[in-house]
Amino acid sequence: MKSDFREVREELRQRILQGVWAPGDLVPNEVDLAAEFGCARATVNRAMRELAEAGLIERKRKAGTRVRLSPRRAARFDIPIVREEIEARGAAYRYALISRDEIAPPDWLAARMALAPGDLVLHLTCLHHADGQPYQHEERWISLAALPQARDGDFTATGPNEWLVREVPFSDAEISFSAIAADDQLARRMGCATGDALFLVERATWWEGRAITFVRLAHQRGHRMTTRY
Amino acid sequence: MKSDFREVREELRQRILQGVWAPGDLVPNEVDLAAEFGCARATVNRAMRELAEAGLIERKRKAGTRVRLSPRRAARFDIPIVREEIEARGAAYRYALISRDEIAPPDWLAARMALAPGDLVLHLTCLHHADGQPYQHEERWISLAALPQARDGDFTATGPNEWLVREVPFSDAEISFSAIAADDQLARRMGCATGDALFLVERATWWEGRAITFVRLAHQRGHRMTTRY
Image 1 (cartoon, rainbow over the protein chains, first blue to last red):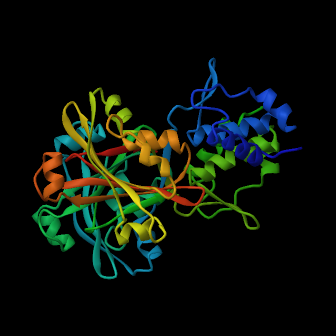
Image 2: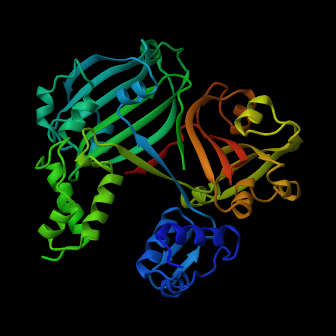
Image 3: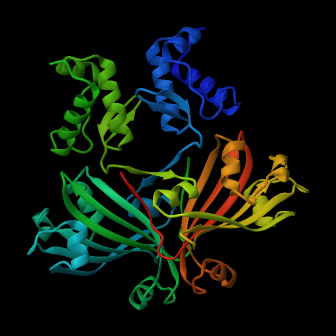
């Protein structure tokens, strides 16, 4: 038979699932598998690459490819722009800027963003509503050393995230998920009780090695971020 | 020059970053790009595939490939086994089973797992410690209709997750992140105050279309789940 990489991948996956190849076992080499499936070695290679990405096998340069002892799984989360996220839920989106200041960064932020002494940041707080209810509270700091044009940004009509996406189309980011208790101010803004447990997303963004922005996104009570993998 | 796909990908990425190709622009076709880079069309195709996965370009069968208006980003989270996660932090891992019951599933769970009337579930609660401190509270339900061998599982020495990984090496899952307030029982077990905000991971797992297990993982106060993308 002449197989495409999807067929090869499925067949290999079944052998792992059914224990034909047990955890820790060496997987036959690509040349032998290509001969067995009557396909190009590149086809087997592509199938193996996808199985490795799925965490089923582990490829080591010298030691060969083995079935992983415990499958290492990875979940993929799309990081949407909040307006798109709200509209995808069929709700009406409304944005409001709460505050805008140019400030010297607090120490924790200067350390987090690796800012030089004297660097200023633009500090913005805003609220994203879904059908008139507070949905996400955004507290954001933008490095004015890295992005001086943020001074001219108009953040009254659209959020800084949409501005940043246009200004810095590609970047590296570190994202953290956690839970926080709402303090008095956040509770007032989000329309919840002080101490309520809120889902927090924090994200630091770099472009060409420089910190661009750090943001804290607190979500309405009961918010869930869900994905399939 | 003869380019490999990484060089092609980087060059195309730079054109997008620098606005040579603006958001919404049609990207030149693969044949022309292959001629320009002096490489195989498959090399350009691989580079384009990676740029599409990174959310920079959008490929449509008939309409061609365009630079995305707002880059769609995705973050990848490794889903480790809690023992490995704790040991990777350099902490000592300890596991304790709190309770084990065979029960009729509550309605919400029967709906969530699409169980048939009369199906029973194994209900387990356990605690994972890091250096003697409660790190993660696990409440798990395993479908005995799908996995009757769970009745014979010994969950006193190792957690049900490690047992499941051996029993069902590959599966589909839906995962949710959220924040919860600890109730009295959870607070007592986690050594925190009632009402404390805890980071919650919920995961439902299917194998060949059948629900296998549903789990709620509550984490110690201040826990963060972090990734780079």
